[in-house]
Image 1: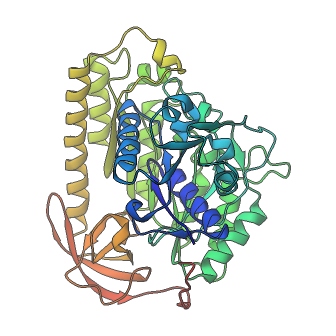
Image 2 (image 1 turned 120 degrees about the vertical axis):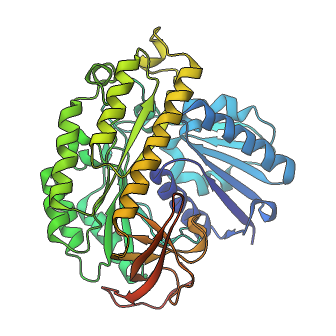
Image 3 (image 1 turned 60 degrees about the vertical axis):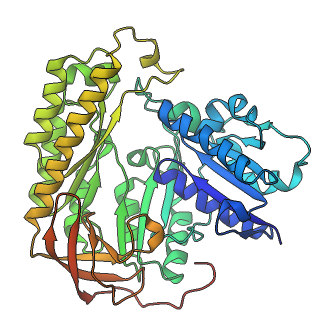
Length: 448
């Protein structure tokens, strides 16, 4: 039986896609290897959000070929969709598979001859087709499945290449989602993370329209559900109903990542983001009033074309004055095919990097202050596996704080309570308080 290995770049949607790729390859009688050196097939699932990411992916492709020259290599994902010929030209690449064909990767790999390297398979997106839920239980050792219920985006923000590489917005049917939730619960998973490219637009195009709030309520009421968490959700589609659900259901994690991108209304208009800085701040304050201990994160782009010193100061002021607990900072990266790529009022690279540094320093201060405010508190958490890239003996609190433990008296994938004992600038330390599983501990299977 031949072996495969999957590398994943990028967002939680890509991690969900990689889980589906693993499942497809296992169903085609392949076995997952522990590393790429032992694999006959290496799959690289790519992102293309920045030029730096593109460069890292090309370096990875060359390294895999150098270290394992006899392995076949299939490159898929957003970079494969955006610039397939650039990837196909790299020595060692056998197949480049676009996003519309990603769900057929296992079949394509078995059909194509290894003697024809650099073949590109890239189909058009079918805008009228519902998104189909792929099986999600092969997580590569990770604890929490990312259940992708929506793909694609119709927003067309001026800086974003995602609508081009992911296609139009598409949603899975509620009954398919609930069936997958039930299956994940039966397999013993304690926390399910619901994700999508533009999650707040879930259900907009379904023939029998179902909104995100209605779907989440049905998931939260599924018997045996341990905890539900949302991934990133845009502010223009963040509903009051989501906050109401989180304040009503104990199994809804009080953690929301809501991309802001800029605190300047002028830059938000250039970005084609349909809200104001004040509206964003009011949303955060409303969440904090209803959920005092909620983790609140955001994304910010540093150095968008035309961003002045005053625009940047407004972003910093909003972050300081807000209840945000952390910020993901992205230096502006021009993506060919977006409107921002054609903008001529570019900010100089040294200015971009300095602004990004200042934003990251501000994020560290917000994060440190939030974690210190929880010192001595007992918080719900989940024990993580070492594959979560947080180290051994780490628990993730429901409000999204990784807590290092001197020992972990339970295995990964257990809902527990931990007490925050010590807070340093770069780490939080705690102690196990109790196991608080809300669902029966099922026997693990080899599908884990």
